[in-house]
Amino acid sequence: MKFKQLGLVGCGLMGASFALALQDKGLVERVVGFSPSASTREKALQRGVIHQAANSASEAVQGADLVLIAVPVSHTANCLSEIAPHLHKDCLLMDVGSTKGDVVAAARAALGDKLGCFLPAHPIAGKAQAGVDHAESSLYQDRALILTPLAHNSPAQIQKATALWQAVGSRVHQMTPDAHGQTFA
Image (cartoon, rainbow, N blue to C red):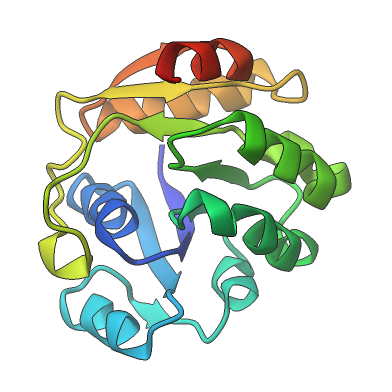
């Protein structure tokens, strides 16, 4: 399994660590990243987190076969609305938000016929320090990762996402978005 391009929206701790992990494992050829802060984009370039800095979320996802949204959950709806027209119909789109009910509702409202691309994910990982400066390729190693598949997700897509997270060292579990909400409330 190898992806041609990761479109990374959010180059902070979670997103940058994901990009570094994929690169360390040889799972992605190129990473195009966007963060609202120009200084974060520059640091991500300097650290080798991304190969190209995008000027917008929509630019970051153009041509990507894998997209990770690593923004605060409160920004997810706007992010999905912005990127939806630019997503490739066969890409794998995931998030790293800690809630799922609101994220799934935002995806249903924004993605239209591309809803099947979206497979919500919640890595149970992090650090006391945030930001690209603290990103590390081992952040997801030996950590639980919750996939919350939707009815629109194909078995092949679920398997691809599972294999991807396992390849970066995560222990993958599945539950419905509702069960996730009840478990993590």
